[in-house]
Amino acid sequence: MAFCGSCGAQMADGTAFCPKCGAKSAAQSGAGVAAAPAAAAPTRPTSQRVAQAQGYLQDALNVLKTVVVDPMDGLAKAFSPMEKSRALAVGLTCAVIFEVCSLIGGVLHLSRLSSAFRGIDIPGYTPPGADFGAYLKVIIAGAIVFAAVTGALAGARLVFRGEKGGIEGDVFIGGVSVLPFGLVILLSGILGVGNIEVVLIVAVFALSYFVLLLYAGCTTISGISSKLAAPAVPIIILISAWLGKIFGMSMA
Image (tube, rainbow, N blue to C red; front, side):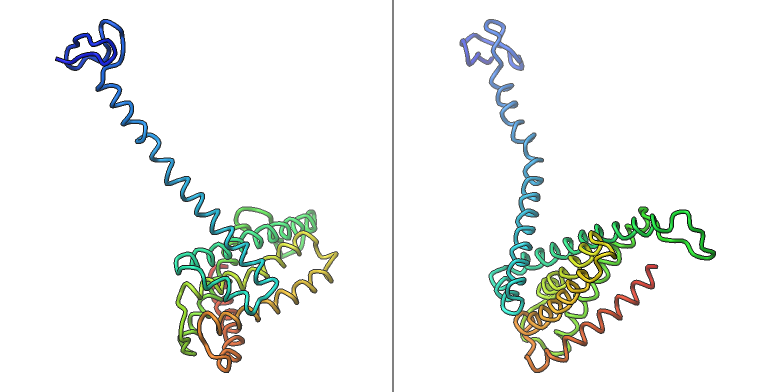
């Protein structure tokens, strides 16, 4: 036999509501209270993942601000306070930013090419169109560039006997170092060929930052001596270009 928690009247076991005052039984109230956290539980992991992604994005933007001002010492300063897992996540976030910039710039270029060749029939040539297949190729090309640079960095760290660092350092250096090229692709897509001089000037700066970031990453993060880092950087660039060509041709 149970009693109503509101008015004290007797209630049969299993009764949902008091027959006298109509209040919920204690069992029903407890079930409602217990069910509330269960219903809210699925939202917690989602909100945590969103907050984590926002944190990685903020870290990536802070790294970008740091290396723009000081590409040589700034890269190590940004990397050193991070745990391995966070450095890995920030490197991948930089790669995603590079992909987004490349995709937007690539879409703008494809749209211009499609408009320029509209109505022109060239035997044996089909101009690239702004469709899903073309967008997918731009995304794959960006992923190949990042993977090639990261793979070349890992190979150089092993061959030239880097005293520190690991795959998280390779991903971090690779993601940050390709970012300047993503900005060039985005800028060229926005400005178009009519402003080729401006695009070329920015491209020269992007190439310089790319080389400086690779050198700084090899010496300060991977622990390669400065004597060996000098030949390691051009080797990394050549291997990256070769790997990009191989994977690019296989995906074409």
